[in-house]
Length: 149
Image (cartoon, rainbow, N blue to C red; front, top):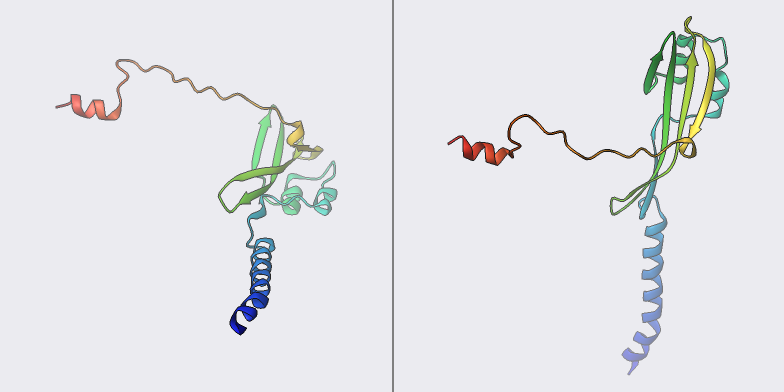
């Protein structure tokens, strides 16, 4: 009888403690969702340091090497991309924000302008999935092996 009474009193405490431990594990850094940044971390202080008239070398010194470059005519541009991602413990990745810093240079490799673009500025591009037909027969790898005998 005393054992039943003790079990009735202890069981809710043990259950509450176990539930608290489980919830604490979900809210820690090793929880269900992790957040991280891919690419360049664009800080406000670095952004303020890039001004018109500065050289490409100074921009590279302040921001680091660009992730992408582009040349059009006598002008060029450096691109720095920052992507903030949330990833679940189950491998599902969700892009929360994407920021692209573009620094434009003139023919003398001096800063002309800079611009910050976000996901809202982007456009969705439909990717074509059709294949271009090759000359001759369109056979799979296995078909080619079997027909060579």
